[in-house]
Image 1 (tube, one colour):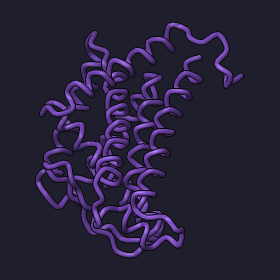
Image 2 (image 1 turned 90 degrees about the horizontal axis):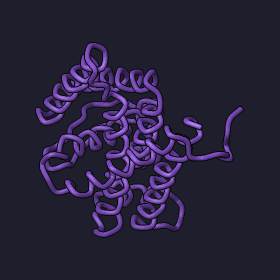
Image 3 (image 1 turned 90 degrees about the vertical axis):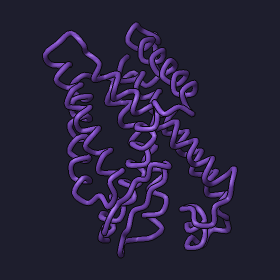
Image 4 (image 1 turned 60 degrees about the vertical axis):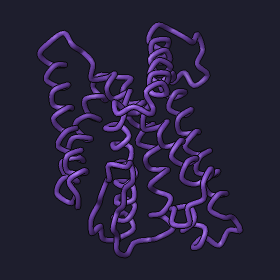
Length: 233
């Protein structure tokens, strides 16, 4: 029976889960402006652009190319599809994938599945990438995941779950920050939120949609922590 009420929380695994998220959050915030986090920030940008591409394909559109830039920007060229579905998919999609990775880290089997799917996604994007920053990112993380997997299977270095959890936490935090930086603190007329405000009949401007998307992303993060505790109970 699923322990939705989290009775008798928190057991050892649940404490480790929360403590690890807390440690990762502190480490990420302390190293935020350093080059050490750049690859993980670019992975978040990759998931943002990949979410645009997935939304385009799901609404019968055509993905013509994808780019991730070293300055932590990115662009996905699409043709057709449902525009008002594709636009919010970037920010909300990357937050969703962060939640999925956090939940996948609660079990070794699901962590392996997540790492495998992530590697396949990077391999697919490698062939549609339009610039070398994205190609290098794909190749680098495919090699990184492969090394972690080999260490997991052949040595006592069992870090796959923690790597998946770190990427999930990093993705969730960066998604919330990115929404605040791009859509709320400074108004960029070419942002996804401003474009969405133009096509959406609701009386809400780009900043308003930025706030809404930011709240949804924060809910994804809190939901990941709650569901992770439920799974581990």
